[in-house]
Length: 349
Image 1 (spheres, rainbow, N blue to C red):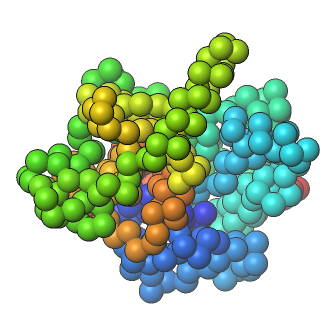
Image 2 (cartoon, one colour):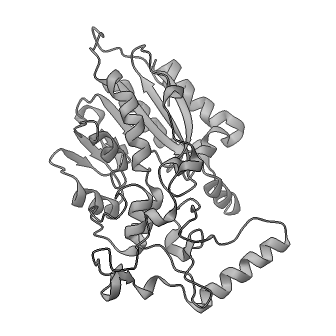
Image 3 (cartoon, helix red, strand yellow):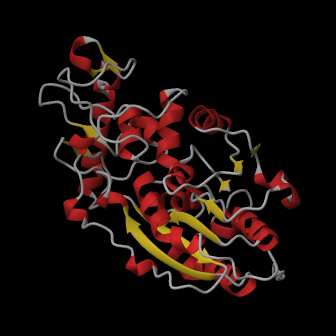
C-alpha cells in the first residue's frame, strides 16, 4: 500500500521488483492528479488517511510511507519556531500522522514496511522523536527494525540525505548495511538531467522551444530577482551565514530540491553565461533529478502547473534509491510466510 503517496515515487520503485499496488492514500488534490495520470488506480484511492476505517484497507504485504517531514526537517522546525508554532509530535496536523502508519501496521500486520523522512528526524527534539518512533515500531508492534541514512547523490545529481526505516514482521537475515550504495564521488552530474539545448532532444513545450529545443526563456529569472538574490547572499555572507543561492554548471551537483523551489528557485540556479541571468530547472529536469525519468527521457506525465510540479518533485522520494532498497528487501518479502496467525499487539498513540 502506498501511504502519503505524493506522486508515486515509492510505488514506482517497488513496481520495479514486480510490486502490485492495492491501496493508495494522498490528501493533496494536485498530487492526486499527477499520480492518477501516471499509474493505474482501479484499487481504492483515499484522500486523508485519518478518515479511512482501517478495516476498509485491503490486506497487503508491504506498507510504503514517506510520512510528512515538515515537522522534523531543519527548515520546517525553523519556520515553525519563528511563527511560534509547535513541531514534531506536538504538531497535531502533520507530526501525529506517524501514528496512522502504526494504526495500519497493528491491524494488518504486513510482512514489511519501508518509511522515509528527512535526516533530521534522528536528531529532532534531542533524539526523543526518533526514539518514540522506534519504540512504537519495535516494542509495541514487534517489528524487526533497521534504519540507514542514504545520500541520493550516488544516483542523481543532487545532495539529498534521507533516513530510510525498514521493518520486517519476522526474523530474517536482512541487513541494511549490506546494501551497496555507489560512492557519491562517482555519482552523475547535472549534465545527465539538463536539457542539452543542441537539437538532440525532442521538443517538449512549454519546457523547451522549437529552436534547437532550447529551454524556454520563462525559466530565466528576472533582473529584479537576480539582484535580490545576490544582495541577500552578500548580506548573509557578511554575517558568516551560509544562506544564499546555489549557482550550478552542467558539471556540478545540485543542492537538495525542496518543495519551496517554486518560490524563487534559489537553491538550484543553472548558469547561462556571464551575460545572461541564470535560470530555474524546468519541471522535466526536476523529474529527471528525482529519478522519475532517466537521462534524456520525458515519459513521466506532468499534468499540473509548474508551481505544483516543483512542490511535488521537491516533496518526493528519489526513485532509484527506492528501487535499490526494494531489490534488497524483495527476497525477504517473498519468502515463505511462516506465521501461523496474525498477532494482535496493543498500541497507545
